[in-house]
Length: 319
Image (tube, rainbow, N blue to C red; front, side, top):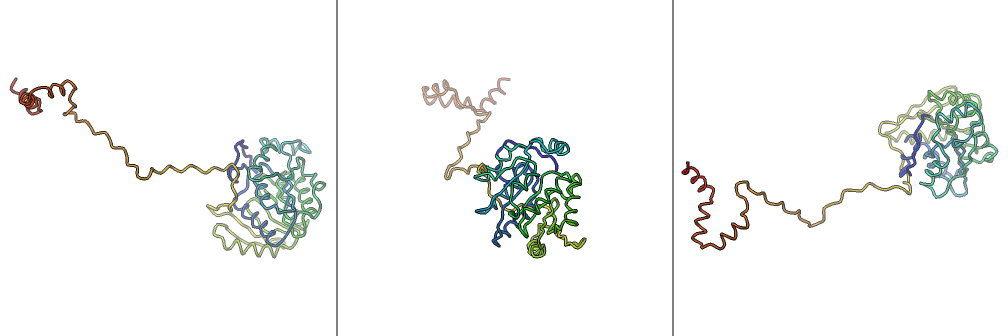
């Protein structure tokens, strides 16, 4: 996970919330959660590591009546050890609980249950066998991720889903080791892989994989491949260029850009002022009065004398 800048501006849309939650993972989160809901699959939601709330906001949209959504994060507080403290200072120095809550309340009327503490406390705060989905996106250090995976195993209901972030980023080898250790030695069964996340279960992945593959094969914006390794079926997904996230409600602060105002019906444009000829300038007020007061015969003679052609002839004769 790279470092992102926080902002004090209220987000208008989910894309405006700082953080790392690509369109493909938004599609997969939405699909897994909606699949559970349409099948009457109930259980609480849990996120370990929330940053500015981007994924939490989507998760909160799927909390059903009677379910609890819990978020656990240090939010810039004291880490349990020196390595974790150094990691927090480097990658999350701009993170505050106030920023998370501001972003979350831009989209929801009430906050989730927020635990401002190391994720090591979560097994004492959430009941065993109570969660239908756990998203792990906290520390990148092996020991912490290993323990977070163990907690998820105990907190998930049978066939619940765990999502592990940054399982194959070059700067998070501890997450990779803890993830594949869980797959090879701790009974975790992968369902699918995105560029950033592994989606898995300690239940039977096959029925979910079949439905997921059917959905993905109907999409033209997702690259797909299926591989086998160490007895596991690995469904690999990647976003194609131009992939868009699923529709999501805008925040209470959203304002549409103002469209240009159309012209008033029936209003004719103001006529342009006539150009003044350089050779025919308006008559002065004195000349107009003089012409009006002189006898007509004198007026005609004056006009002939002042005509451009007559003036030119007079000039030539005077040479």
